[in-house]
Amino acid sequence: MTWYKEFYAGESIEHKKEKVKWKILHNAGQLDIYVIALSSNCENLLDIISAKELMQKAYPKQDMLVVGVDKGYDNALELAAKIIMDVYQKTGNLNVRDYFLQRQKEIRRVSLWKL
Image (cartoon, rainbow, N blue to C red; front, side, top):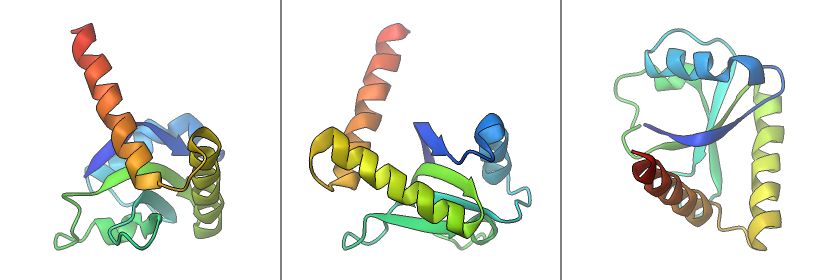
C-alpha cells in the first residue's frame, strides 16, 4: 500500500490524518474510517474501502495508492466526489488514475532533488 504524499482527509480528521495513516499501516483498529484509493478496476475511478477490510492479511493492498481518508462512509463518498471534481478542474478530464500516478512521480522526483 502506497499513500499519495498530499493525500486528502475529511474535515473531521484533517488535524490527525497522519495518525490515522499510521494506524492503518500498522493494522490498529480504526472504526468507521474509510480509505479512498485508485480503483482496482479500470472501469471505475476510485475505491472506498473500510479500514477494517484492510486489516485482513489476504486483502490485496500491494498495488494500492491511497489518495484520501475520511470518517464515515457518507463522508468518504463526499470526499471521493471532491477528489474527482478537483482532478476535473485541474485537467479538464476524469483520468483520475493518470493524474495521481503522474503527480506521485513528480513529487518523488522533486524529493530526490532535495536530497
